[in-house]
Image 1 (tube, rainbow, N blue to C red):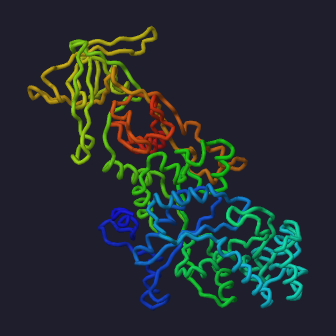
Image 2 (tube, helix red, strand yellow):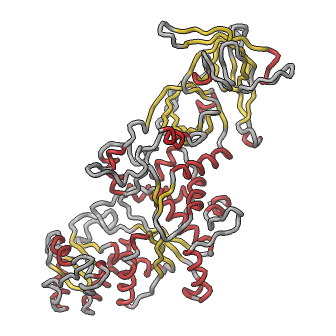
Image 3 (tube, helix red, strand yellow):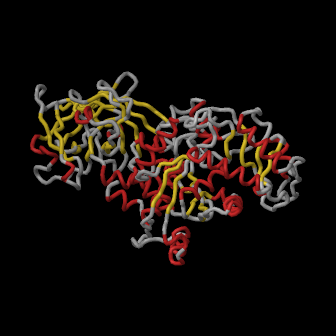
Length: 571
């Protein structure tokens, strides 16, 4: 990790630049002051490898790795792989790539819950021998029925008081594969009348005859997440187990397992998960979008996955800044998507090279420019940073400009091209529109202009002021390209809360992707895949992996302004 990345993943700051102390950091500071955990800080990022990471995970990555770095501690990457029917090596590989891209560095501390399956089984047997766990024959539906409700206590399973010997025998036979899926589970024996439903004899193990991506067919029983998570934290010596708020009720079980077994006990702390407008962050819903073909895979640039954002051209620094800005709280809230886009634009404005492209072309013929002449202009890649260097852009008699930069009947304060109007071609010459060519339907097909040879480089030869400056590409040298213009995947602000009778799929935005043909300056023909640039006056765009030598493909990363918010206000 670079020094810049390390600095970006430290504590968030306030507007005056001073460190901001959220409740998690305050808790860690108190623990360190009291000598708890001997002043050590050891966190972990524990994704389940059953899908690709998304923006919600980015918040957790930045928090866990950032807190560890800030306090001079360590952060593990641990795959909580306890459900073999949903987990794949593809997801493991993608998670590694995403965490590393965002700036997470786990060194040699890559762990798997499956590393601990033998030890977890021993702990389960220990609970049985202590009379604190039993094998239950109730079905999953019956267990839910027996559990009761928030206002009524649960009732005990008829199998709850089996002897230790019978429970051990049944549990070992479960492990040996004697029983089919769903016939038995191992449950903790706690309190069926507990006000916390989680504590009403939760399931610890279930039978699942499925091959595991790491352990193969060694196991046919698998531990539940709540049983695995706390024990994995304990085994790894985690000090502060940072979880999202939905695990608040589960903390009582986390504590019960470790205290009952008399094991080293990390501190679980919950924080609010990320909510974002026009977005779904439910892994189940994201999987549905992929499997039903509503998007073009997990890395579709419209997806809120880290791989999708990376393919779209979003820099990791922008995501880290976004996570720092939204901070860490104990109360769920929803963040405007515009804040994420602001962080993206702010970062790209500072680092993206500037180039010229025309997305909706109209031909310009400069009548007094020699037909067989071509010249070149040296243009900087960044107007405020000479270290970015420059490139040579060819100029000729026939150009393309943006159709939006011309008006037959211009409104007031329209400072671009119009009949009789003069504009500056970026870094080139002043031109004046003399004639307009239209087709049979009255559509403008060509502009006939003249240039001022004395204005070379876009400089005024006699001090006259030209208010409009537009970009262009030479028609003879322009590179044809395919450009993908993205909008929100969902048109509804909250696709997770649709009207009765509708699902989140009803909020899909039919205009979330529009593909157009465009023309680029020649330097972009050899740009590397993944490079994000600013098409001057149009927005930020990233070269996509679908590009070929004959046809580069560019994804729009972000507009230059929050155009979506303006559309919503108009609506």
